[in-house]
Amino acid sequence: MGLYKLCTHKGRARDRCSHPWWGSFQYKGHLHRASLSRWADEAIHTKSEAAVIFERMKDVVRDGRFGQDLTTVVTFEAFADLYLERYVKLRGLRSADEIEQRLAVLKKRWQGRELTAIRVGEIEDLIQDLKAKNRRPATINRWLALLRHMFNWALGREYVEQTPFRRGTQALIKFERENNRRVRRVTADEEARLLEASNSLVHMLIVAALDSGLRRGELLDLRFGDIDWDRQLIHVRAEVAKSKKGRVVPIGTTRLRTLLEWLRVGPNRTPLADDRLVFLRENGDSVKSFRTAWELAREKAGLATVRFHDLRSEYASRLVECGVPLSQVRDLLGHCSIVVTERYDRVRLDSLKAAVARLDDGQPFKILSRSDDQPSEVKSVSSTH
Image (cartoon, rainbow, N blue to C red; front, side, top):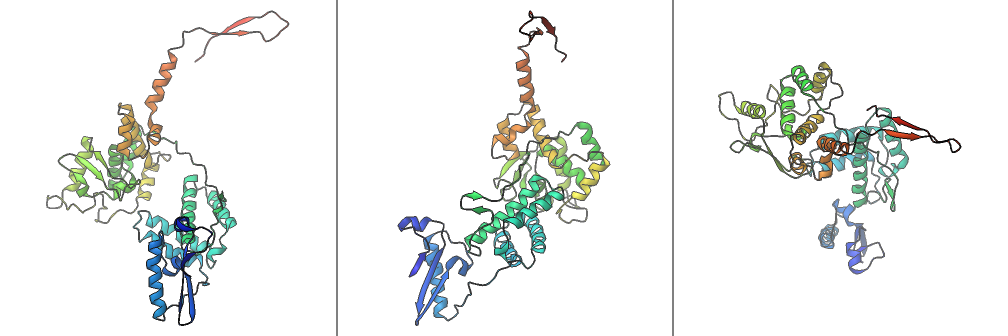
């Protein structure tokens, strides 16, 4: 049969459909047949890619090395390791460490279970267990997004015939509803208390976050070569940005400029190398996480409800209060849509309140009697607000 698909599509529709490519090759009286994507352990997107892999398969058959057992049972643990090596690490994902930690938990949870045995019920139980641990909806959704992508990747490589997240066009697992409208302002007094309670590393990161709006990961990946000292600009590289799009953030405050210039000076009072990270620990090690130090600082300052990401939000809110257009705030934050940026526009809400207040002429509301049998009585009620 050569190169083909197990579907009813014909012509170009067959070449473009999502069904996997198969190859069959008869050699010395024996028919050798395999799903090409699974045999090669590669994703196949076009017919030309399938043809190249089919030629490789025929070479293996001629050499007598063709003998893959397509009925081999794949455990969740084995597939998780494969996913980590062949997708996460191969693509250099910034969230690789976080994904590896989650996979370790899932491998322990489903130890010895076949990949195809993970059904809707197991994932729903996972959701309930995460809720029992008071995990936020956004955190639960990250677990679900990881699992959904894993099963879609397994489906594309034919390790499974269906994913527990979907049956046809019906979604079987619903993601949690997130409340992304939270904006926790940080007052000048709270800022001072946080800085006073922080160690040197967290102190510097707080200043940088408040004065640049960079995300936690963007700060920890910042290198001296990313800073244009002449033009006073910070270049956020595309590979470290959340949106995978680079952006430029001006160094707008004296304290941020002073901080970066001070960090740049080496032991011999010479500028450090461009490839050196800006924020390091005192012993020179890179910073993977500073969660413990941050939580100690905010508890000492009596600000347990403040998150580090709130410092980025405060940067945006302060810009809006200073009259900076939302389109410019969007570009500085690296948002893909101005809709996300609008949550910081408290000034706009206050101006709308002031606008409608102009309609008030001070006249009280006159309440009429509700009885249809009695003459109407009019009472004046003045606003107490």
